[in-house]
Amino acid sequence: MNGAEVMDVGRDALWLTIQLAAPILLVGLVVGVVIGLFQALTQIQEQTLIYAPKIIAIFVSLLLFLPLMGALLGGFMQSIAVRIAGM
Image 1: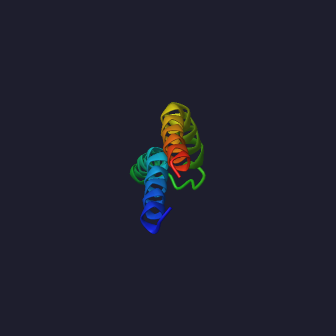
Image 2: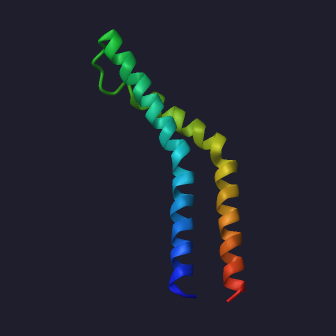
């Protein structure tokens, strides 16, 4: 395995990490902005209000995106196994 192949595997791993984390992070971002906007509009200054909806939204999004995440990880593992077998 030469340096170019190592860089290719590393780039694929980083891209996979972004693909796995992006849906969950986006859900957390959207829920946080919506709750923050709600707090600003109603002038509610409760600091703990944001945690319960964000935790529930992230948990639900994990349940929804888990099959996609599994498929992405499985495909990556298959490509790594093919590269190992081709050595």
